[in-house]
Length: 240
Image (cartoon, rainbow, N blue to C red; front, side, top):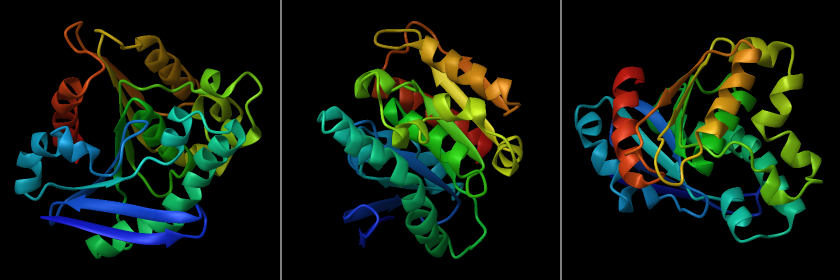
């Protein structure tokens, strides 16, 4: 079962599109890769790879169009791109999560987050910024340090949206909530993968006492959809 919901976001000054597959189960919000749209995960057969979990009612899968990631790929103004990364947290909190909860008819449900490449950045960032709303993040082949793509003097908006940059100084209630959450950081060792980014993210999470696990997959697992189609069903079977 597939459904599409759209609305105008005053925060983003544009339309937001939320696509859902499945009828019942734990909600899983999957962020697309940098330039992807909400239906990218269907075109690249990730939804098909999750068909067993969907058919058994274990999960419902949601996805959004890429917003900040697309701006980054298109090399738009760094300040605007950074603003988009930052405002995404309020869009998730005040628009996307309420829509998912209404669709699930459960105002307390805590979705799982997932994504690959820059989608992994968004999944981990969303958990770190909104630990009261989400319970697990699954980052696959993550690109967690985007600062070099924005220039050396990247704006404050990006600092506060990037876990590698804001987590070292994080204290208080938000950190205490994060210490009750869990992050899976999976990466292949094959072509175009950068396990160093995954280990750097894990080190920062661990230094703040945030539970996480690094899974280093083989040299036969490249930075590609075939790898993510293999990874995500296994993790969701364990965590959903």
